[in-house]
Amino acid sequence: MNSYSINGNFIYEGYILENNGGLYQWNYTERGEKRILDHFATEKDAVEYALKKIKSDEHANRNFIGMYKESFGVEKILSELKNREIEYWTDSIPYGGLNDYRTRIFIIGCGIKKATDLIQNEEKQRRTTYKNNGGNSAKTRNSNKNKLWSKLKRLWS
Image (cartoon, rainbow, N blue to C red; front, side, top):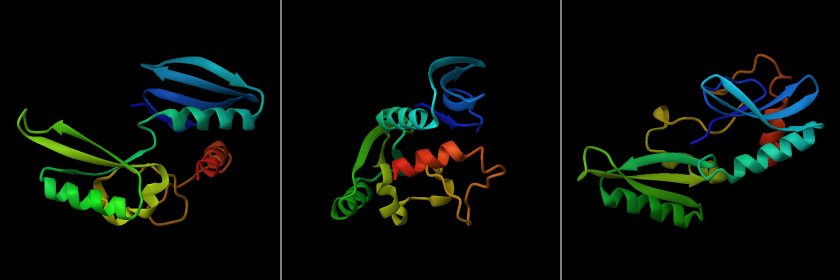
């Protein structure tokens, strides 16, 4: 699974879109080594490229809503997702050994906005959407720093 940084938030490993002296760069960082993969003359081109790359990452647009041991819990949630016409993805993983499988349920993309009430334990879920409207929103110290992220977010919605 990849991580993404848009103009400054720290990541240990993954893809970075940043403005470097007026030139926009798409980089990959791993173990402290940063490689420039592509560069762009305009912010618009850089944001469109980043959006295309992030959308093509099959894990980047999945929102984890829960992990279930019992099949009736899975069936209940999947039935509700189908009723709401929300696209989802599931898998089964060994949890407590080879005979103890759990089913994980992920909602694809912006469908998460229609299913917030179905998140199994909201306090422990990693936030995958950018917010800046109060509550437990991401606080911004520098509005210019998040300019690229805001444009990318608008294109995604």
